[in-house]
Image (cartoon, rainbow, N blue to C red; front, side, top):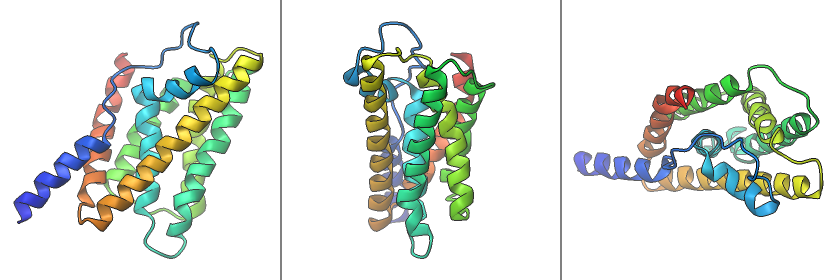
Length: 200
């Protein structure tokens, strides 16, 4: 029975873990409005992993008390600082160490999910917001300063929210079905692959 549950958890973890192995495109031609903006987080393993991990980790907190507020507050913190970072990047404000911050976000959020870490609500929001600022800045430098840029930004914010909600839903579904190990294994996989992003 235990063996069967472990296999189920591994299978679920494989489904949870991002499977797209592409780095940040960062090239002209990727910023033609809402559709490209929406597709962008799904086309980069760094963004895909971090945003899914935010949802998985927030979902792990939902066991009553202030933890249940993390389910919506932490993704909102990410989205708010994502927009702030994107605005900074689009207006030419270069944040130092953005790429390192993105890689660190994948590693840290992966480990936090792997261990099911429980942080105070505010501390988790600040940490997630700091990582979101880096992701937003990376997005922002690719955005044209026109209406297409606004549509692109709306697209990647929408996609980010979808990834957060997916992570939360998968985390809660796993918990209800006795597969709470699955999000942890997915987080471990994200943390393990984070160093590979440096080589891309």
